[in-house]
Length: 77
Image 1 (spheres, rainbow, N blue to C red):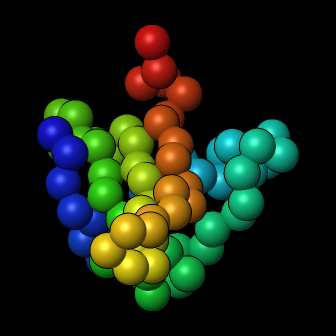
Image 2 (image 1 turned 120 degrees about the vertical axis):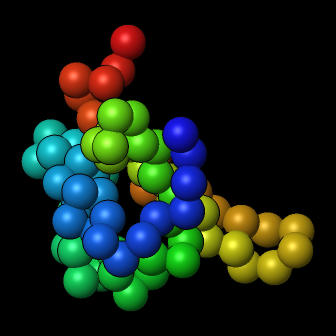
């Protein structure tokens, strides 16, 4: 299920993103940073576990930026 992220999701989002950051594929995101921008985040939840996330920052009605798109390695097919 895809849903808007909640503050309690910040740690799980950080863990998913930072796994790719360790490989040099993404920028690190601290849970505190994610919490401040939580309105920009969506998560994919499966069996009560966050398995993916995306941050969509809206600049105006015609422009948006995808900032963090990640799927947990064990959920990729």
